[in-house]
View 1 (tube, rainbow, N blue to C red):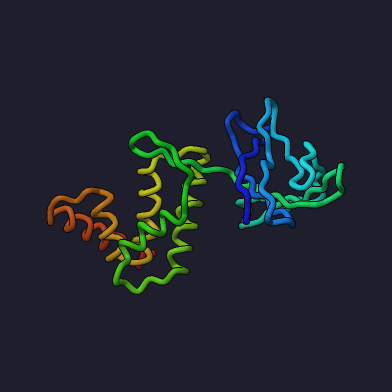
View 2: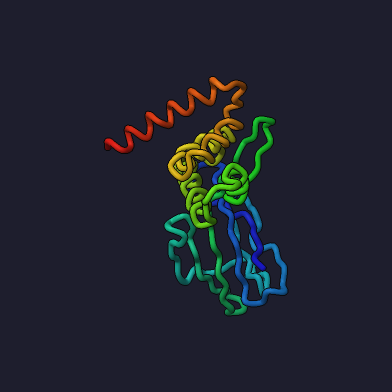
Length: 196
């Protein structure tokens, strides 16, 4: 079991928050590993709750999307690992904010791919491309329509029929002419891709 907690970043823009997953050796314990405080965050030892720890080793993981830190408690001497990733929030049309979810992207695209020859690896890769594109904006909060736009490009390259299905819902097609325009745009994209 992994406990997900928030940890503030020092020397970062105001409001920047990291999601920190603590992987303790004793999995039955539950704990509040991080306590938010005025100037930063304190990582409590998951074993003795000491409010300090020393970073022994730091490494990038998940292709630079996360930082894995090996920590040591000066009080009890035990070691534990934190995995820190930047929290990416999606702002829905209603104004509600929720964390970005690859699973939600995959679920929506899988619906569009129903009956098509698209495997799970391709869907996972598409979700990774979408997350990378959204993170590349540099904003910690992204409107949900930008996530939809980020899905369209990789989905068009993956499967044109699934792309048309997704685009018809995302762009609220209301007539055959909407489909015809999108099919023409697909043909033009295919010609440009084949020529370049």
